[in-house]
Length: 216
Ligand code: MD3
Ligand code: FE
Image (tube, rainbow, N blue to C red):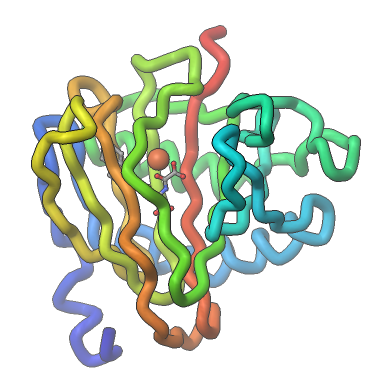
């Protein structure tokens, strides 16, 4: 988006569901800090293109930080405490990440959110995430907090069945989405990213999703 219009979105809220909301520009002031932390994280746990159980390679590259990291291979999807590529624990979750995720959850009505996993997705032009549910976590009472950085994406937000109608919502640099409660298991996805560039990330989009995986 043109810098001149960026301020008009700061502080805006778009309600996607009863308990799902976009907090426009919520992460703007900490965005460069978050990207600097991602640059450190990827020196320890590099971005990789995971294989799905169905035999496809994901167009989105991903890595993780925190006690648990999401992985996928021919055997299925799961959270692990060890990065299968490096054989080492995932990098620690920076405390700025915890503070940001907690503040956003609180703003959306979910108090005391303490994520134990942060999945970091990296998109380039053409990368997409097909419609799915996030259901590999053990604790569905906690919300998920998502932070969008860099070039924009069109997010698809559906219902509890894959075939339910979807709504399209643009997500820009600094936007944070929080979804929990009745919206926690709704289908969602990201349409193929259009080529673009952003002053902070170049031709990439970075998305962080904060989750509570462990139920204790
Ligand atoms: C879910 N990531 O990593 S998060 C994922 O932009 C994932 O990289 C996407 O889905 C990304 O699993 C989207 C944003 C989001 C926003 C609203 C939702 C997910 C939602 C509403 C309901 C359910
Ligand atoms: Fe998801």
